Length: 619
Image 1 (cartoon, rainbow, N blue to C red):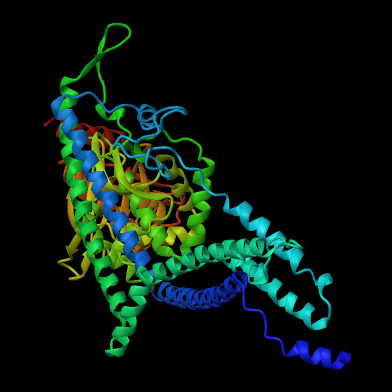
Image 2: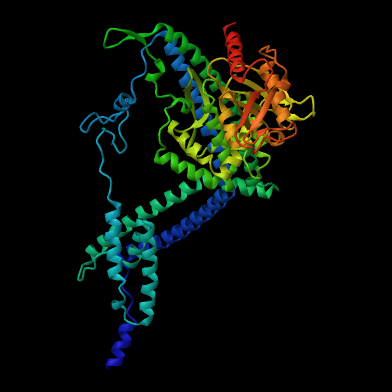
């Protein structure tokens, strides 16, 4: 038989039947196909959900942030109200003050190493097994790195036999790099099994080959189960349910995004309304704490080192209520205060409403014992804020502003002049120095003028019929101190009154009104004693010597019942007596004199006025 015939005979021999290892390889290939399909399904599902989540966040992120800020403000106000109420109750009951802050931190500190790892609720720590033993976590990072390096060696381009194989290796290596960058251990394991990336062993028998294939099959089954669990997790996730609901709403002609936006806006507005109500409740809790404090101060004493008994302030033991800025000793401005001054100057043009709220907080603290009536309640504050923000396009309403306070402001409680106040305040009392510095800058002063002008009492002028916040001023000061409320439009005096003792509230802000140019002051000396007369700036510019003389007579000669004709009072400047129609502004120092032959002198008139004013105080 020729060699050709022998070859043809061998070719006709039947192929050997597949062995167990061949059948296992077939199962391995089928399992790899299933894993590939699972992997593609998982990748598509993950990409779809990620894209939906991105669109959802981009469309509704701001609305969710608004709601979160409003709810955070509600929680802050609720905690403030509860804290003030608890402090008042401790004062009424005579309970010991709360422990200092450092003690509370020590009490809340975690147990030392080696202590009981179980928490107070009897739960085992995370990672504990059924018997309470801690199970070591698999080091996935190390496994990921080892498998990545093994695949990199297997797919090295130097091992390629031709250009086509080199391109295939490069493509696979790109997938390997992407999976490694994602930290996808399962993905690398799938690639490794497809490539047979385990260690290659030459010369193994059929049983060893079968065992190796079975091990690979078992590994792939675990990978397939892991991929299936991840797919099922994504299908059951909140994001998938939300995406499916969005699809259903779209099919029904709706728009889940817009519907959700409207719901979030309504929820945020409801939370802000709750915050406004809680702002009033916090103020009421602060007033109740003030009453409890005054009562406690009458009965609580502490013995001093010399045996003398002295009253002490029970609020001094609490970290909830800080000292008001108006009662701090004026020191040089801190670095934080100077940084605030710069920030306010920058914000005066870009976001004047932030400067306005800072000025409101500052003026509330400067009011001392009594907050100006325009800020005394949440409703009053909101009304003034709405009037202010009408001049600033884009300015948020009060609820939104309180929910997103600048870092230098906070909602809290402070003590001023023996009273406790709650509301918007500077985050630290020493920041008030920064506001004072900023008030010297024109842009900040412009905003502050608008704020302070809005704090006057709401009045209707009987002369010009204008209605709006009236202007507080000192009708006169120096020799006497007579307060006045004047129409901000025409300057008509709506009412006058004396205040005895230390001024507070709106009256305490008079220096700022003068500094900011809301009022002007004309000063004239009587026998060396300066007497000030405050008017609206336009009135001060038009003030004549005759009007100044009549004002002096109205505020001093008449109330003190001095028998002296107003015409006997002369107004003098450096150049001598001023005529009746002469304007007094820009004339230099002014003096009030008594004409010769009037029967008295300027010195005698001064002493008479002083005695009559003192007599009024003694009544």
